[in-house]
Length: 396
Image (cartoon, rainbow, N blue to C red):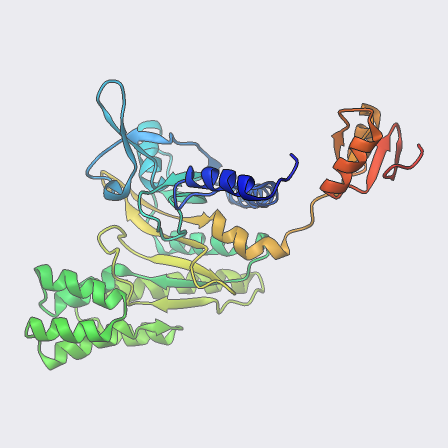
């Protein structure tokens, strides 16, 4: 397409831009190729670990029980049924498991990749209304070994695409257990969950004063906001754990870390990538156990996140998803260059160029001037005809 400039082209561009909702965007060929390359790499790693591919519908029946119901895009079909665009994968995968694999065999290892839509321009792994994820689910097993498997798989998948990440582990139920042991209930407990998750000491003080909490309880709440770091965090958490739930959470994290570090030691690989954030609290009603995120250098948002949950009916599950937009941002400088593009003047030239590992586009005209202008605009420097690849405009 010939590039034009001036007021008319700016007006056209503005018209096209205004037709695209905020929080969505076009994807141009270089980024599409990068994302497709990453998706294929991740899928190969997941498959090598025994995670088989599935697809779930983009449209599903709307339900108030869905964890993202309030943020889902909804529409009404011809029969008056309220439908929703897929807003997260775990619920859809759970529905598939209940209907297609009711008796297992478990554990069931599944992988997926596709688009999600949210009305709000924010999610754990992105800041768009429409975004892409690839991920895995481990269904029907509930153990420290299963949780460690997912951490090891997350590490392997990110390393496959050239990303060395720090894994940050949490256990949202730990904060709830400590609050329960402190005698906090109802609205006061809910408000403190949010303040602790945001690590807002000022809000903790304000809520403690509002609800008349003792100085001892207030000190405990502040200690929750500081539970971030290496393995020493588990010792600090154990000192706060009074009841069985809280002690069980700390013990489980210790066991998961031991499985993870032991597996890497068995390979002769260095561990030490695990960090612990025991102040993670906001999603305690969704996750039933461990949660984790992966952070890559140069990006202050996670590229991967997941955790343990319970499917409808109580079937245990755990998994994680990779945000492909974020991952593309991180690894774009690391990806291999695309194969050189040549312009083939005939089909034999195209086949010869492709056999040599090049990308070949077929000429659409015999007008050499037009082909030269197109090649210059596209950055093509070589042409192909028959068995030969030669400098643009040269004699074959």
